[in-house]
Image 1 (cartoon, rainbow, N blue to C red):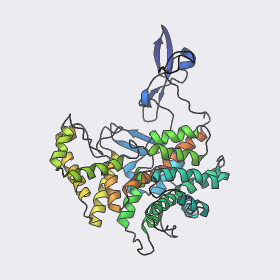
Image 2 (image 1 turned 135 degrees about the horizontal axis):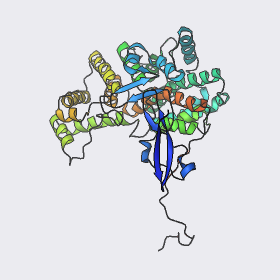
Image 3 (image 1 turned 90 degrees about the vertical axis):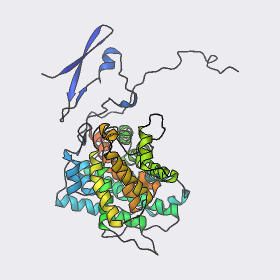
Image 4 (image 1 turned 30 degrees about the vertical axis):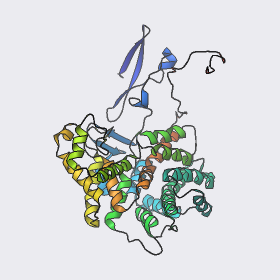
Length: 429
């Protein structure tokens, strides 16, 4: 017998179905509530609202669990690469040898940009926000591939996916080169996905870039750990735009804009800005810890705790090791990195943080890793966007393929003026 929930409104009882997910997450289905009762539910910020059924990513914030298509993130990080994880997220299974070869070949085939697109970078001022450039260029890319607006055929979706994953790196690297006034570096044959990205970012005619396996692995891991994270702001944006039957390129460009916000993709940038502030003021670690504990202090400790994870962020455990390996390998002397390591050690040993489960999250370590690699601060969120591309594509596909798909259209509770005349609405002197 299926479980139901009951609600009494105006003395009348309504029975609502209960949906149970495969991981035993329960939800009350209120999709017919308005038509039956005239009422809607109110949930500011959608914090307790399930907007969809999805079989892509599972998170248990209380237990610190993250799984892509049922596979634990730690196992994927240990055994896989970003591209292989992307395939798993988008198509629901790990690729066999033939599928992997086809996917790799398509990525290499589509990594170049149309030469006319290259000229568009010249239209942006050097100081243009990289996320604005990325969103605009992904939208522009759709103009050069209009035959991929309709993706009902599997081979077309595969092509569109390969184009997005391949070209987003090229766009990011070209925009960076433009911002610093250096000539662009084209993709090089024979390099892996992440090797090619680092090559395009840092290679220069007078200073060839030498690929370091530890750096490549850390960057690839960065992309992999950010590949999807359930119904966050940017992913929900992609689904919202995609529900109107907007094409994949446009929907993903909207996701980039959603990720741009400081409360979402800008979190790792905020960590480095916090560390810069600590360094500039000359604060000791003891002073920083005291500020955190002081209720009257306006100081915010960035990179600790997480809205979803009430335990240790499982991604942080993985990136921490990569962070330690990269810092050790590069031997980089950086006061901000020293502060970060001291702050991490002090917090993990302090009962105040442990009792409140304020552990370093993935943003704390990812910011440190990217700084050590040489990624400039204003490009941090772009790295996040490259990594999140598979999740956005998979969620767009889930909306597109749903037999019950309809345009997303939330309701609201209106609290403005009641009906009044035109004259009454005029502001009086």
